[in-house]
Image 1 (cartoon, rainbow, N blue to C red):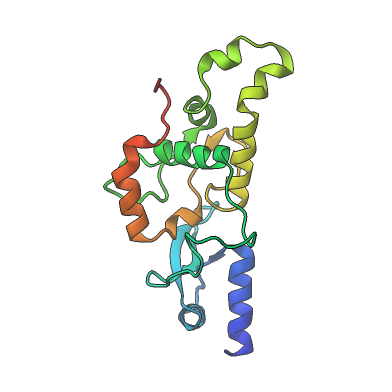
Image 2 (image 1 turned 60 degrees about the vertical axis):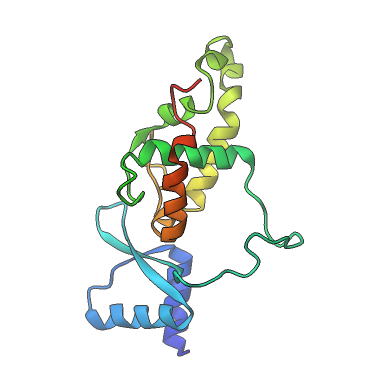
Amino acid sequence: MKDDDAYLLARARALRVVPVPHEAEALRDLGRAAEAVERRLVPVGLADGGAGLLMAWGQDVELVGVGQERGGTHREASPSVLLMLGACLRACWTDVDQAPYPGVAVAEKEVLAALVPPDAVTVRTGIAQHAPTAPYRTALRILRACGYLAPDAGDGMVRLGPVVASWAEQDVAELRRSYLFLPQAGEG
């Protein structure tokens, strides 16, 4: 691997989503560098409306240790994070015949309503009224930081993030089959 390739890969990993290079040669170099380490470039949108690329594992790469005990080398997601991801996916991915990313923007309160019964908030006063939603608000911050959700734009909306665009087709197919089991507002 050339030093330029190492730089391109490090930059793409650090930024998570890089703007699509304007020059064809730069785009070709980035694609070649990604392919050399069994990665692929996934087109995603940028917050400013431009086009970007996310580096993801190749579709045919079998990740070592997936589904196996790894002795503390990774951290499992908490139930609140997994539930929040499921609720966001259900709310933002409205047409399961299409790819989940980019989906639609949904009000944060609508997503929270899928996880916290409405009466859990109304019976409390003061700061205690926020207690039922606290773990889910923390989960939103974690999912945004990890790229599963787009960064907070300050508008009270939740959007799927670029990492969702990198999901393998077999995983998306499984989500399609399980879509009706994801948390949704109004259930109960």
